[in-house]
Length: 136
Image 1 (cartoon, rainbow, N blue to C red):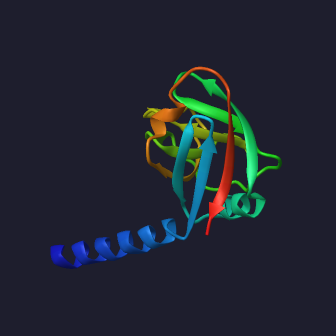
Image 2 (cartoon, rainbow, N blue to C red; image 1 turned 30 degrees about the vertical axis):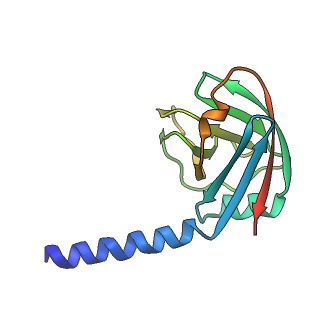
């Protein structure tokens, strides 16, 4: 029985991993560049249709950069915890780059994806302009 559960878990993780790898984006600024793998949900599909985007972002609580998207994204499941490199959505058009681990209050954030590379480029005070574009 345990072996069957292990196999089922591995298959599930394999499908999730494949879904996450469907869309990748590049986030660039004067501070550097990072890539991100997007999760597969209605919000990320809508985000990809908006790309490329330039977003003016500001620092918030020394854990994240935040900026507004030109239009709202659909609501999907939310969560409270985030990790370094998480891309999220606070309100329907409030894009967030987390450069530290943490937790947000209710109702939580919509997870859009996970950045790879040196996300510490955002760990500095002050505003930043980012360019978000699809990697083909």
